[in-house]
Length: 397
Ligand SMILES: Nc1ncnc2c1ncn2[C@@H]1O[C@H](COP(=O)(O)OP(=O)(O)O)[C@@H](O)[C@H]1O
Ligand SMILES: CC(=O)OP(=O)(O)O
Ligand SMILES: [Mg+2]
Image 1 (cartoon, rainbow, N blue to C red):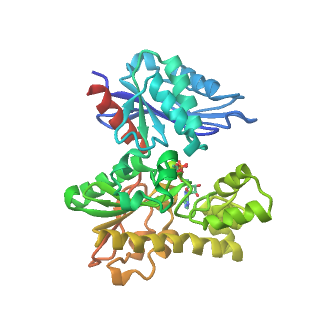
Image 2: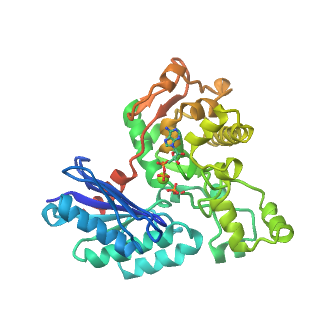
């Protein structure tokens, strides 16, 4: 029986896809569709032949996804030959309804639609992808894998905001947490590498990508996480502010005359590293800092200090951490951020070896100093493989 899963991660203007064998982790094809709904649409595909690079206008997700299927047909491997077991969809917000992946039907589509208000940047494109994919691949089960699912174990004291309980209940205002698929994968990998029993392991997982979050994991379960009602809270991100006094929002509404939508856009798309420096990519921030740009230097400092602040909080929440793990584009590649985020934590049992930290390569590795109490690791995430595995498990029951 085929274990092939087509994994789709539909963003606002992009579609990332992989065709994966969920049993042996073999990737038969992967690709990226960019600039959907903008000028200069772009498709990059790597199947079983030469890499494919196409420029064509893609008015919407419908056109984007149909192009993916065409490219698979022409450049391989065609889905008709593969015999798909499932299509796995990344869905960012699942509210408090889903602690497991779910086979998608019309009712689930409606629920994801209702949850769009809580993740306006993420859920609408996720849903657009689901609708088109179900239409063009009607005979394959489609599975939703939620970013929020792994965090459904949060205790009430960690997910409750101190506001009027009736208002909170009525509007679903609580911490949900995101990046859960990545955190679940990375946590399991970490315990496997360290040969630790997950049930007896306390971990702090830092997912530092475009979005960034930190999670405290005890016994394989999330017990606290930095993202909240939406993926805006917590760490400083590429274009999102992370933590900010809500009073600043009222102040900007009154004094700067920003509308609610403008404020939403301001904090989600024009803040974070982009707001502080004018660029969102950490590599660019480093280049500017090296050239002496004071804003870039401050931004790096703010970014790392916020991480350290949360590590302190989660050490206190866990009592002790057996491992601290970096993942995501920044976490996996940025030795400077890793060493500055952990600076001064030796007394808490956290110390990195600078030679190990500076070593490159896409593989999981230990970077802590010999003798340090807490293992520090870099573990590349693989959300697509995790989605493929979870999707296959659901359809096989
Ligand atoms: N070598 C690098 N050094 C520092 N940061 C990097 C490096 N490579 C990628 N990044 C950062 O990682 C970000 C992308 O992270 P990633 O986890 O791949 O993103 P996404 O959240 O879209 O999945 C980029 O925006 C960039 O800031
Ligand atoms: C939830 C979230 O922030 O996702 P991403 O990092 O992909 O933007
Ligand atoms: Mg990501």
